[in-house]
Amino acid sequence: MVYYSHVNEDNCIERELAFEKKCVNLYSIGGSGERVIALLDSPALEHAYIIDNNAEALYLIELKLAALKSLAVEDYLFFIGHTKEKKIPERIRMYNDFKGSLSKKGMNYWDTHANHIIQGVLNVGNFERYLSRMRPIALWFLGSSFNKKINQTEPVDWNQNRWKFLTWLFSQGLVYRITGISDKAFLGRNSNPSIIGNSLRKTIEEDKQLESFMFQLIFKGHLNDMTPSVLPASLQPDVLENIKWKLLNRQLKIHFVLNDIRNYIFAQHTLPDRSLISLSDILSFVDRYYLEDCLLQLDYIREGRLDILVRSFLKNRPLPVQVKEWRDNYVVCDLSEKEKTGMYSVFHLSSGY
Image 1: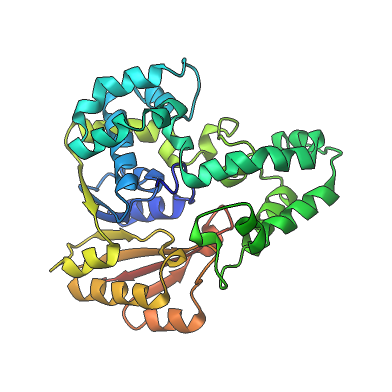
Image 2 (image 1 turned 90 degrees about the vertical axis):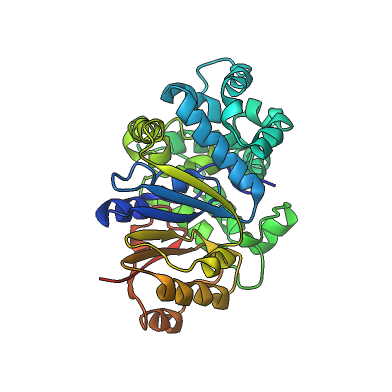
């Protein structure tokens, strides 16, 4: 199963860090690939190790990068489903033109999932399909006045009581269970979905609905109404042009690794200087001891400077005692206030300076 296929994390923090620290090596959980892609135009980056224990996630990222390398950037954005300027069947023709560059397993997978290519692969993840089922119900409940509100920041007469009730529903874990979400990041006794409701309310209160990719995905299912300057980096044409150039000129080597991230880390004898480790929201799926194992091993095998980004969504947010333990081996900085969706906590751990 592809769990996520679109942008689901604000990648600006990782991107800023990769540029600032002139990272040469990237080790990243794959996910949807959008966070990874946003880092690939970092000028110093030479190797990107994309690691995931879900083969379908790796097939998705492989497809996106092969498409970017083969197609013009505007055609790539159409192919993945971000834009709709062309006729939908064109996606299959485009795929047939470059599928020979995929791995054998990747090509076999997409040959048998042609319907996903037709839809645009940004839209085929389990989470994206969940949103597509729930969106019409939410918009019907909120009424036509809400459509005016989410498309402009000028004063609009809209039903705020319904909005408050809906965001209260977004804050209840039972609602996600009843509506059939299968992502365990939303489920469990230590999950705190009120983070979602609070974030959505704050976005409206600050009139930032046209700047929030998460808000746009939830209520529209696309990012076409966002201005280019606030689009996620992985969808910005200038960024994609730079990545395409690096791939075509062999300035960047992509390595796909089917493995659990902890197992991968423990299998390494050394980790090169100027490496960035992007662990995504790993804490949604593992406990604190899994993460502690990773961090201790990373500090043990590093050869030089190491930068680590740890995210958490609704579950297992780091407690002060954990952060204090991290400081035994790393310089720790809480960057959560810089995270634009308001739904993640983000910590930067660095060592080797």
